[in-house]
Length: 454
Ligand code: GDP
Ligand code: GDP
Image (tube, rainbow, N blue to C red; front, side, top):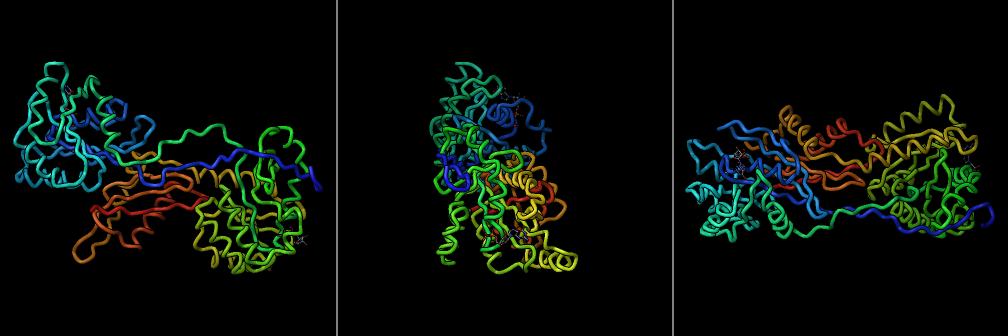
């Protein structure tokens, strides 16, 4: 224990590793009735998850979340081409093209009871032109004798056929292993152990009241030490109580020993702020509500959004805000914080203690948003309705289509839109705005990237 009652402990680094790229996509293609939707159900491990097929009607492209051997991926049921379409070759080509464009791996499904048909051979031609790995699935291999016969499918030139019975589950483990081998390298899903106190950066320009606020929390320091004995925290960090809970404030050394402040140049202060934000999950940016929002305040806010951290803006010194100041502050907020309307705002006073405990619930809201994961099916239901109601504007006679979307990661939420071409910046902003309207993400930045097909 050192002067001021601050106790330093050590804690293992609980940094959460998130896969960086989008989830790999596996597309399932093949003639109608070969068992594609049955196979998709088998892969995603649910029954009747896939909409029943109406004969002769092409299903929509529907993505589903799947997992095998600790890896997450997306399965896209590409639907069947119409069996009696006028231009069957064109229909096959279009389907294969879409599958190839958006998938990392293609599952080409053939009916092992029937063997290969002309239509299968036509599809193979299309698929072979792509550089994407294709796995040949001999479905309906319900028994050993059909399984033996399925070896004749070598003739399709796609390598070894993998016999499965989507209906009974036979061979599906081997198929999933083959898919895993074909998928691009990606980090495995990380299982989180019990988590320690959430990491918070308390930042703001000099004199906004950071040390005063920190001192508000210090009174409850004793209880913290007892309950987390044995854990460890970086020597410059502190564990504090806010709203009856323990929080891990990163890099508070300069705040509690008020020396750093006197000696630190603005350059070093800014570096220190950046590294505190980097180390945190959520940042509390303290502003002095009695003064205009400054450029330095803006720079600190940008550091948080650029680092992709959850954000709570605390307007400190609220005790100094009268009706007059309130009027101007509201105008400043409209003007200066327009780009981050999603940030959580809280009015407090480190001096009087006003609303200080409310910080805990603001932090929770921001962290919950930051870690949100939207199931692929829910995301795409929403997206389908959105693009139907407001399609991308036509430019030069063409409009790119959004094929589907997946959430590539969380903390902060990152989304990937698979499209037929680049999207207008304006339309991309529209999608982001609508995404927030639907799912919230209050207190968290989100990222949307577009993956046009190659
Ligand atoms: P899709 O049009 O390619 O999606 O085919 P479906 O999944 O709708 O399946 C067409 C029919 O084949 C359905 O009646 C399924 O029950 C049946 N089916 C699918 N997989 C198998 C299988 O492994 N063995 C057998 N015997 N029938 C299957
Ligand atoms: P820091 O540089 O961000 O750590 O800011 P300090 O905590 O040192 O505070 C700077 C000055 O603002 C000090 O004189 C504090 O007493 C004062 N101060 C901090 N919080 C409040 C508040 O909520 N209301 C008022 N009126 N003054 C405050």
